[in-house]
Image (cartoon, rainbow, N blue to C red; front, side, top):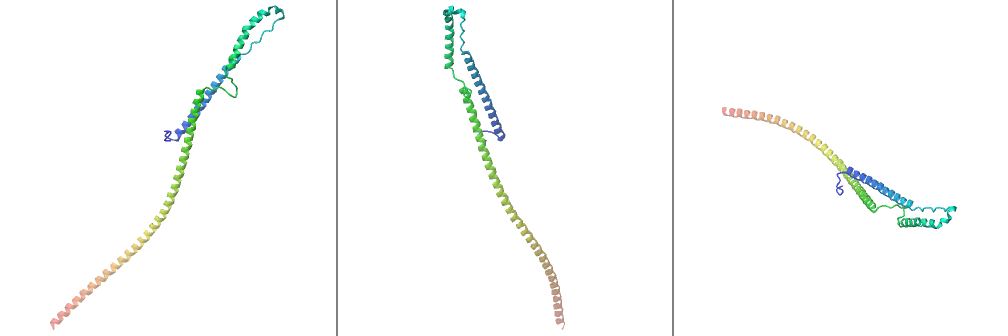
Length: 208
C-alpha cells in the first residue's frame, strides 16, 4: 500500500475496478476502429467490382469499332481499381487491422492492471502472514497469561494461608500478653506483701 500510495484496501479495489473498466472501454474503442477499417475496405471492394460489359446487340454489328473505343476507357478504369485493391491491406474476419497506438495504449493499461493485481496479491499475502503471526503471538500471550494466572492464584492462596496463620499468632500473642500481665500483677502484689512482711519483722526485732 505504501508503494502504491493508497490509503487503504478499499482504494486499491477501486483502482482495480477503474482499470478493468478502462480496459473494457479500450477494447470497445479498438473494436470500433476495426469495424470502421472493415467498412472502409468493404467500400473499396465495392468500388472495385468489375463493370459487366454490355452484350452487343445483333442489330449493331456495324458499330463494332465505335463500341471498342467506348469500352477502352472502362477497361482502363477497371484496371486502375484492381491495382488499387491489390495494394490495399487484406481484411479477414480472423485478423483485423488495429492501429499501433491503440495496441500500445491497451498494453500499457493491461500491464498496469496486472501490476496492481500482483501488488494486491502480495499485499494480501503479507497481511495474511501478519495476521497469522499476530494469532501465534496472541496464543503465546494467552498461554503465558494462563500460566501467570495459575501462579498468581497460587500466590494469593498462599498469602491467605499466611495471613490466617499470622492472625492466629497475633491472637496467641495477645493471650500470652494478657497472661503475662496478670502474672506481673500477681508478682507485684506478692512483692508488696513481701515488703510489708519484711517491714513488720524488722519492726518486731527493734521492739525486742
